[in-house]
Image (tube, rainbow, N blue to C red; front, side, top):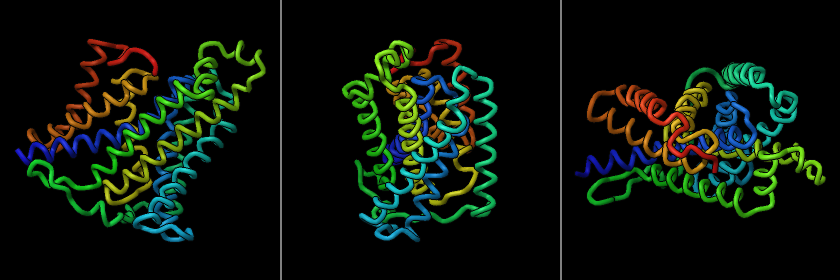
Amino acid sequence: MSTFLLLVATGLGLGALYFLVASGLSLIYGLMGVLNFAHGAFLSAGAYGTWWATENLPGAGPDGAGFVVAVAFGVAVGAVLAALVELTVIRPLYRRHIEQVLVTVGLSLAAVALLQGIFGADPITYPRPGWTAGTTQVAGASVPNDRFLLMGAAVAVLVGLLAMLRFTRLGLVIRAGVENRSMVEALGIDVRRTFTLVFAVGGGVAALGGALGSVYLGSVSPGQGTSLLIFAFIVVVIGGLGSITGTAVSAVVVGLVQQLANYYAASGVGDLSVVLLLALVLLARPQGLSGRTA
């Protein structure tokens, strides 16, 4: 029983990591219609930014409040990078979806090459707060604390995004801009600036996923963002394009299926199970689990 509980906790932690990566992707696509293959670059920027900050930024460090400062720096790096990408690359290509895909794929490949050139191709040991190295007893199972860190962050991000969309003026402008951009602009509201903010929020959340995901994985490498982005796309498609709540449910299902299949079947079967799950959902419910935007 304790083994099963540990597997469930690990699956939930993995699902939380997938949600952190996929929520920004879903937000950007659902509200702006941009299929962003460069999203993994924001994740990597957050991970490397946090790693760099723990070594060099005054007040930052690998533990306690210092680690919070380091993660905040990594998130800021991801958000700024995302805003720059939207301003310089994406903005001229709205409504030109094929060009968006080509450009963002190119950016993704260039980002990996750039990180390899700066930090090398080998994984770098990541700073882990001492608390995350310990375990907590849950019904007889020793659950690593880094799973709770990921789950707590994912819940906070989910609540924050839903609150932003439903209860703030920014969320109102975003939803109105998606429905009828011309009308909102006629009211004197700068929709372009709002969309830049959305891109920055999506990039910041991805960077948070990179920073905390590297704690879970224990290292950071140039291809890490690309690897996690594959599962993030699967989560977004299963959950329903543009639905934050659907993405959250999908992330939990994918994490649990992958973890349980890897243990009870064989190593590697988890990835295959996730792909089969994607195929089944697309056949039975092409619009995804939710079928609507957040």
